[in-house]
Amino acid sequence: MEKSAVELKKTYIGIFSLNYFTQGITQSFFTTIIPIYLLQLMSGLDAGEVASVMSMVLLPFGVKFIYGILSDKYGLKKWGRRKPWIIFPSIISGLIWILVPFLLTPDNAMLMITLLGILIVIGVAMGDTAIDGLILDLCPKERLGRVQGICWGFRSVGIIAGGPLIVMLFLGFRGVVEFSFIVLGIAMIIFPFLVLIVKEVEKPLEINALENLKIIFGKLKNWKVFVFSLFNAVCDGVIFVILPLFVLIQWGLVGATGSEIDLIGNADLYAPNALVAFVVGLGVIAGALIGGRIADLQSRKRSVYFSLFITTGSFLLFVIPVPWYILMIFAFFIGSSAGWRNSAFSAVIGQESQQYPEMDSTYYATCNSFVNLGGTIGLQLTSILFISFAGLPVFGIYALIFLIMAILINLDFLPFFTLDPKEYEINREINE
Image (cartoon, rainbow, N blue to C red):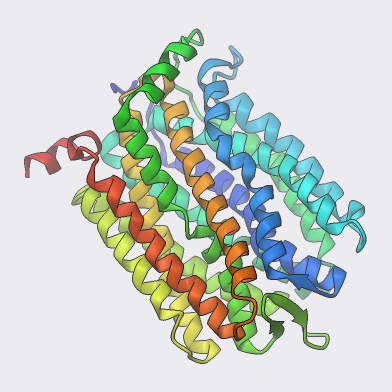
């Protein structure tokens, strides 16, 4: 795809990264803050039920290709195709976050967080898809891995560390945790307006979406990419939702019987949870930067292979019975594997999407729909595994789940082997 004369400025990357970070914090609240918040609000939780609810909340990410079609085909003349789909859905999500602490009670908490969460995530997924499209419009292919690595790294830090750190900031100033929901809502309303600074590539708004969709979904090679996308994320739910709970259990801060999780005394879980999230977040940044650099400057294939090997090894580390402080080191490794894996993946699918210049955002979003479908399948499988292993010791349950995830992530090699490197590597790598 031939790029326009519009320059991808560092300011633009900063704006994209800030919005990705905010979107990541939203996911962080669902994966690391909401479970703790519900645990304290309801005085008890079932880990399998948490996994099931979170999988439902994240379902809107599974239909990102629909949002891709919207941002590819429809826009406003003064704002272009992407910006309206970044700004308006984020405003709606922000307003709902502000209302969350006023609507949840011990009696309705699980139902309300499911319904409100789905609405919030729809807005976040729309904005996320439109920003992906804006990056694809502006970014030269030889920088795609690094730019996506930086942006995905910020998003991942938001997903893993952002929520706990914001909550800790409020608690440190003797605030209440509910204020963090309100502040996140305000940030989601304000930050998207920064994209108005970005000069968008001018493209005709009249696009034959149906014809392009027939081409995208009608080619076998694209389905190989979609299956690769699905298996690439099958273990992410365990990393982002289950692993922090496991560390808190091994730390002795949370009691567990089978899949049941209970508070021990009046322990404040937000501080240790923030520490776990911070360590994983550092790993994500390191992995995303390394993976993106290798993908752009050496080989995207090599970067994908390394990321899958590291993910497998990181999961296997967690089946070793060690003290909680050693688990923190393992948490850094598994965070780096997630960052590396997703920056390498983003470079591959970003390059694949360049084959469809009129619908690049739709193609990219379709891949991410399968990514999120993979994450949802992983969480639902985890919920089933908790039920199936209920009679085993707590450590044995979690160890078996980590072992199964280590096996499942290697299924991603199969579809990736079938992809043509000429379609996702940049030219100099093929020549070498």
